[in-house]
Amino acid sequence: MNAASMTGMTALSIGKDIRLNSAEELEATLRHIGATRYHSLHPFHKLLHGGKLNKGQVQAWALNRYYYQSTIPIKDAVVISRFRDRATRLEWRHRIEDHDGDIGSEGGIERWLKLTEGLGLDTAYVESTEGILPATRFAVEAYVHYCREKSPLEAIASSLTELFAPNLHEERISGMLEHYDFVNPDIMSYFKRRLAQAPRDAGFALDYVKAHATTPEQRASVCNALIFKTNVLWVQLDALQHAYVEGHIPPGAFAPKAS
Image 1: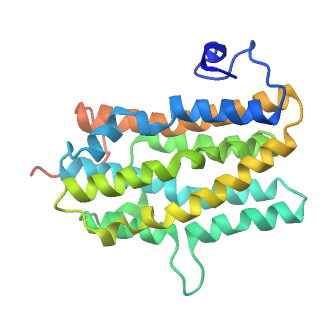
Image 2 (image 1 turned 90 degrees about the vertical axis):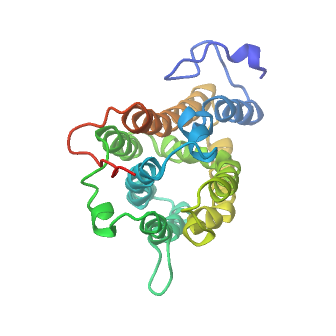
Image 3 (image 1 turned 30 degrees about the vertical axis):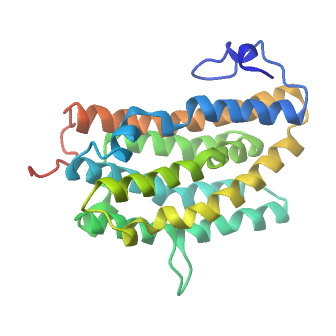
């Protein structure tokens, strides 16, 4: 597959004219979707990583992103519930432990709370999710609903944004440490840990969809699942841009203190 053959893609799907006849064409299309639609390309991330935001705007990003991070184990529990196959459940289960942690071990949610605490946010307020943007809540809940209602294949495919996460995490770590005097390496530990976790998770999901999507129709559904997930991530940044860069904070949402 080449870029010219992918021009029929829409905001919803790869389009009716693209027919994927092999696992190799499927992977090429997935990587094209990531290269053109992953939220690393969003203007808000350019501002965040380039040091163009003030502390209140960075707080708003971390606060809203917490809702996504804390919902991932719920989403993964839904994915597990879709499978009778024990091996798949066992493989997927570690994702819940990665985020929730275990007795005596820290998980991703705790590491994210280190970030919000380090940015000066009250942990009880963050965990309440009372101050997040409505669009954040709607997008994240739509992701859980998608994994519950679509096919198990599509539920796994929707996680494939992890293919593109490590580069974003590296950019975020270096950019935020360089540009913000209120950010230090300790509060960035979530992203450092994901540098190892995300490739492992993405490798399993990619191998799974290549092996189990055996028809052009199934391969299209896998690609459309990834498009859906990129939309879930993108719209959250749209909302942050509208509220905290352009200044249209909805009633009751987090309002940064004047510096």
